[in-house]
Image (tube, rainbow, N blue to C red; front, top):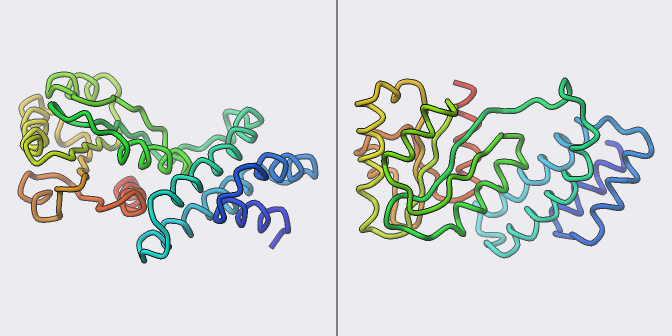
Length: 212
């Protein structure tokens, strides 16, 4: 494979955030296809990171450094893309439910989703059911991602799903949930479309849902 792609991919996997911009600029100057750089170098590197994270070969700090490195590379390429070249994998709304102000996990997932080609709108934290439903109606995303770190705020996820149902919007959006106290059983009980135990799994789930 092209040495530029291998070099950029390795830099992201190793978290060499100081080197990535020069590597990407050199590849662009040599006429590399921009979509190749995004898909086969940057996104492919985050797939490797996701796999390592799932196997506990790396942890959140290393994943964050890799995500920041990938983002720096992406920022070089994105202004050069024409609208025709930019192909979104899908649109996602992400937010932390009412009563919960935690956002580190959510922000990590957002960063990696964006790096994987999704258009993501961050709704923030402490979101009322009404505000989430309003945004789903307004923006018509493919996926709604809800996060909670406190067990006391977990019921808010079910309330959002029930409100979407009441407004006739549930069939129009996939709802995924995540956060430290959440598990697959809870996700199924509240009627969500899936659960991601970590950032890597969340990205895999998003890809699966938009392809369905």
